[in-house]
Image (tube, rainbow, N blue to C red; front, top):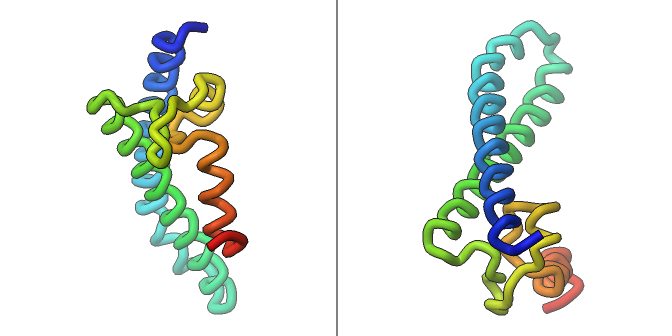
Length: 116
């Protein structure tokens, strides 16, 4: 698959995921009234899960919007750390990737405190 085809496929995947995430996020906001149906001890657990899901949903939406922004600027598929091309295979598997595999591994190690 040529890079141009891969990038087009990525755009379609990102747009589909963004639409799906927005729909799920909006629906979860409507379902918050159901929290009142839980007993007191269950409310806390449901709130924690709901908060995590909302945060995770917002992050995924932001990642999709950021990827579309990089596309509009002609920077999609370019690692934000080293400025090298991100492999098409990585982008197809993970369309919102903003780092190449090497830089992502370093980023995750720093995040975990393994590297300074």
